Image (cartoon, helix red, strand yellow):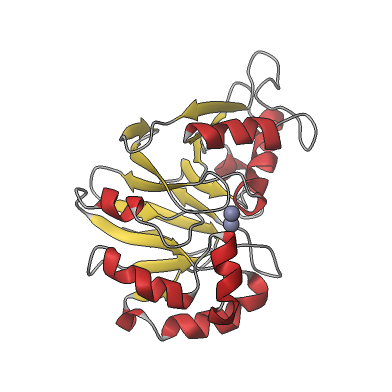
Length: 253
Ligand SMILES: [Zn+2]
Ligand SMILES: [Zn+2]
């Protein structure tokens, strides 16, 4: 499995792009940044986008990807897939003809965007991957994903505070080679993290015993203004098991 990190952050800043990960060139996990990190040709290879939730730092790039497809690839579409409330939110809050055109009807007859609701806790075939969505703990309906290509798997936390169901759902899965886990704020903003459904390094230290042992934990989603402070705090937890996902890097699992 190949994972290309298009954006590794929970916001936007100089050289910091919002969260987006491209699996095997065809499936996005979140789309906070897409055209900002890919050529037009690379964008047109994408056929599905797994969306954890509809916050802008996870979907802004999908708005622009839809425009690229509508303009440059007649008859092609990206299918947005997630738990039902998240798919509904994408229809009503993003592609709603107010903040952005409804690319589910544009171009007429061959729209650039499609939708697919996925049942929770069930494994679905999505493009050439097997995907299990599991609800996590955030301020709006949000899904984590277990993603497998038949040989190797990964777990993506989505935006979440401390949670249970996702870690429980991993247990029957073999060959999980990495856990992409959010961390948003430094420890001194723990109250804000709790109120907004996010992790700090201290909360992650408490979460680690729930995760499968010996599996690398790759951190993404730090808010750019707090990057250095949070990264330093993360270095002190996990005994070498926790590291930062590097933007623009390609990971082979
Ligand atoms: Zn976020
Ligand atoms: Zn969020």
